[in-house]
Length: 348
Ligand SMILES: [Zn+2]
Image (cartoon, rainbow, N blue to C red; front, top):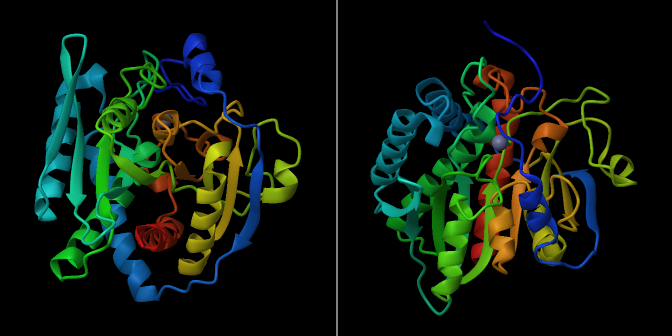
C-alpha cells in the first residue's frame, strides 16, 4: 500500500547527536544575513540548456536506477557507487576510494582531484555532495532521493566535468580542486562518527591539509513563487529578510564562516540571475548544520551549503515522492551556472 505523508524518514537524529552536533563545538553566536536579491549574471539560453541537459539526465538516473541507495539496501548502494566511479573515470580523472567500516560493512566515499599549479596548489577547495538516500519507515516505498540529494550529486558531477575539461585544455587553476561524493549523510549516521563527510574531514585534518573552502550542494531543485511556500526555523526576522516565497537559492554556513558566505553570495550574484540569499548563523539554529558542511566546520574549515532549504520548502522531502518530476530543472541549472562561478572565484 502506498501511503502518503510528509517526511517519512525512518530515523530521526538521536537527541545525543543533536546536542553534540549543535553545541559540541561552541561557535560564536554571530548572525550574518545577506537578504534575498536577484543576481546580475546572465547565462545564455544555450548554456542553461546545456547544463540542464546534464543535470536532468543524472538526477533521473539516480532516482530511477538507485532508489533507496543506502546501507539498508546494499546492492543498490554498490550499484550507485560503481556508477559514480564510472562518471569520475569518464571525466578523465582518477577514482580515489576512501573506504571505512560501519560494523561489518565497508562503505566508501569517492573523490576526484583536479590539481592546481603554482604557489597555491597546496590549498584545496572541496566541492562535494552526499550520494546516499534516506531510509523510509516500513510500509513506505523507497525514496528515489531525486532532490535530496540527487540534485547535489548531479551538480557536483557537472562541475567536475567542467573543471576537468578546462584543466585538459590547459586552463589550470592555482588551487587544487577536489570533488567528493560522501556516503552516510542521512540518519542514523547524520552527525555521528560514521557519517562519510566527517570521516573524510577528520582524515584531511589529521593529514594537515589546507582546505580553504568547502561547498556542498544539498537539495537544490525546488523553487516556488507561491506566497507562503517558504518556511523558516524559529528565528525572528528571517521571513522579513528572505521573503515569503521559495523562489531563491540559499547559501548557509555556521557563524564562523560568515566572510566565506558573504564572498560566495557575491560571486553567485555575479554569475547567475537567480535570487540568492545568504546566512551565517549559530550552529544551534535548526537546519543550519543539516548537511556535510557541518563535518568540515567541525574540523575548522570554512564551509557552506547551497540549498533550496529542503524541509523548509520542499513538500516531498524524505518521502517516496522525491522524484525528478517535482523539481525545477530550469532554476536548478541557473543555480549550478552560478555555482560554477563561485568555484572559479574561490579558486583564485
Ligand atoms: Zn536528506
